[in-house]
Image 1: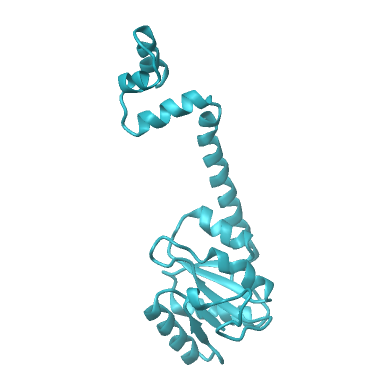
Image 2 (image 1 turned 90 degrees about the vertical axis):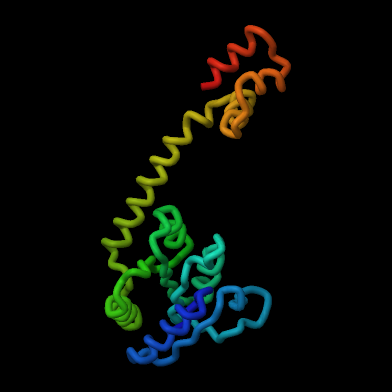
Length: 192
């Protein structure tokens, strides 16, 4: 088993606790040190190994780019994260992670899921996985519906909207576009 997490205290604590819970070989590594393509990896990985991957670095970056290469090596990837929203959870599953688990879950529940996984079960039931993917799809459909009106804007309308969002007033927008008099009123009224 491999614990991949950018937070050293979390990684070492989880590694120690998993060893004490009876899991044989448990190693840990920082995501930036896990080289999966084009160089010698910092740890030995084999097909069937379980990789517990912390999703967030803490500086805005994610470990999404590690999921598919780990899966391609034959690892069973379990992503552990605090609630980061449905799109990221769905992306993890689409990249091949077997489960996305909440960091707030109890250690006993994590151990139970990992024991199921090591006995060729799954850390997430089919029902949980399907429910999560359906929820992600509904969320993505709602996001697409929200963005649809903006996709219908002409380039000029999109530029005016961007300027308004940036805090530029209608008169300044009209002046920048060479519109005077009645045209300024049109910018002010037609542009929201």
